[in-house]
Image 1 (tube, rainbow, N blue to C red):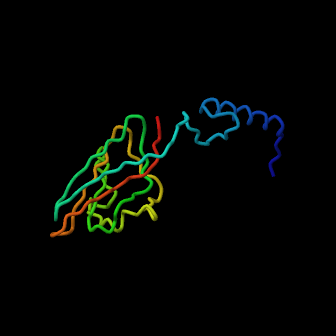
Image 2: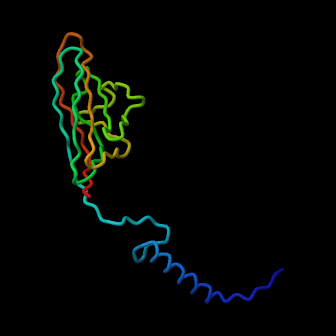
Image 3: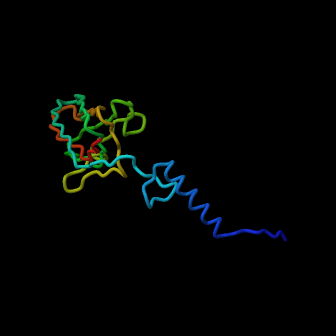
Length: 160
């Protein structure tokens, strides 16, 4: 057995001082715990909707590009449209060239587009950075009938 002479009051005081030094060095707010993530700046969030209207002839493919404003990022939360119209869609982040689908595959609207009554909800947010583009491609599966598509991306605008 090892005997030690420890003054717990003094040790506690030194730990408190060290904690205050770490908090100051890390820029933590008063009352925040060391190691907690604290945003550097406050942000304002608000709902935003992008709407695209597209008319497709039989078997036609059309690309539409939306630009996220320079005021802030756009976090996609839900997709609404007319999913029973017989079309496919691709959604791409134009800046990173990443698609929402694996391997840039066409997604049938029935599985990625909801209705106003039952929107397609993402499992979290998909962020598109300020000044980036959202590239939407639509393909009419019908070889005989034209279609009109109303497609909307609902999300949160994160002002920076």
